[in-house]
Length: 162
Image (cartoon, rainbow, N blue to C red; front, top):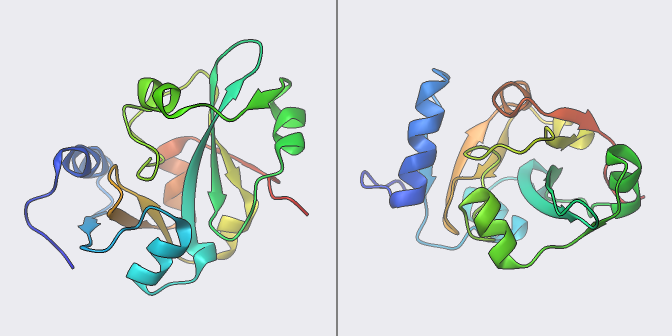
């Protein structure tokens, strides 16, 4: 499960996590952790404990917006629009890579900065530990909800589809 030699993007996330002095460690799996279900299966946790990082694009501004949602929830785009004040759309992979420097399927909640702080799904706060992608489609790190909010400077919001 754990590997001493982390791949490029996973090592970059490990270096960023180290700067926060929280003892957070990136773990790489042989199996994919690309989807929330894949990650939960590899880790052995509930799908809801997966903090999935989603990127949306402002329809008019073309600004990137970050949503960190529970793996069990579908994001309600209408709620996001209400919270940010702009219509959004799903961006293509090139847009996500350009603005985060990470490929879809391994986007971590850190390692990039947007003008707007990320919106963090309130359901993530119901767990004692979360797991987030660490820059590759088979790497993750464990974090508490409190530490996730601290390192992302995120705003807790109701983002799930009812």
